[in-house]
Amino acid sequence: MLKQFAAAASLVALLAGAAQAEPVKVGMITTLSGGGAGLGIDARDGFMLAVKQAGNKDLEVIVEDDQRKPDVAVQLADKMIQSDKVDVLTGIIWSNLAMAVVPSVTAQGKFYLSPNAGPSALAGKGCNPNYFSVAYQNDNLHEAAGAYAKEAGFKKTFILAPNYPAGKDSLTGFKRYYGGELAGEIYTKLGQTDYAAELAQIRSSGVDSVFFFLPGGMGISFLKQYADSGIDLPVVGPAFSFDQGILQAVGDAALGVKNTSQWSKDIDNDANKAFVDSFKAEYGRLPSLYAAQGFDTANLLLSAMAKADVTDADAFRAALEAADFPSVRGKFSFGPNHHPIQDIYVREVIKEGDVYTNKIVGTALTDHGDAYSDECKM
Image 1 (tube, rainbow, N blue to C red):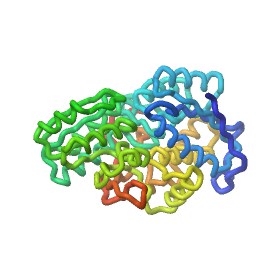
Image 2 (spheres, rainbow, N blue to C red):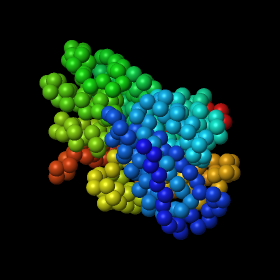
Image 3 (cartoon, helix red, strand yellow):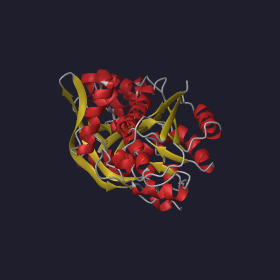
């Protein structure tokens, strides 16, 4: 169902110099139903919180549910561009959907700002001047997990991820920085919920640790089954498998697990403290990584609107490239392929009162870019 959001006042400090001839229309296509709905809802809520706080009359957002189906996402993108006349698109969570939508969007001369998916194919040879990954390149958090596993002294790790673009990027990234022996490497079915066969392989493989990337409901199922399996080995993963929504469903089984993220609610800067407090006040829950990425994506867009009209593509692109906004991550910039350069942290799952959450315990990678920027020619 179509939903429209429009803000009501002007953001004086940020938008005083803007010269928008017409309101900027944003098409947000994200996952709002099915197994991955929590991720899309968080990204949407973070984005819309920033829009509300800006109070910008010149920004209109149209939100649609992609149902986690590439064909639906492509149809929605075409409708938004051709019928709704949007200027910018955003919102996609899943990399297989991004691979279907982003090339079509940029081919039609529109800007795409990714609040989550960052497939390697769009970071290297498939990069585009109008495509910006605001969250990360898919390999990044897994590279940090590999670096942590190496530092922790793990010598024989079992790794698994879903069989789709982000899953393949994840294991590639982990292996790039891990360097140790692999006891096993498995690609599971996207959306899988029964991991009995995989757990049997882990148990018999002689491993000393496990790395997995299973976002959303997949991660919940795996962690619960892992805890019940009797396997007592250290687990490492990216933030997607230990994010705020997932932790409440998993419970004690996740306590103590180390995971990697470019954002955490305890990053010590003014923008992040204000974001966490305002998100809790607005929605009654702690923000997730996806919410933080949605919030930053909206503020990047608002910062560009303050400097240039979206109809002047070159000027607007330059304004986006400047990334002149207070990121909740702190230090943030774009590399030459429009993917982030940022710090990536090691977090530990803890319990604060009745709430499961994460705290930063170290930094895995500093000022980290991605492995594909040299392949990008634009």
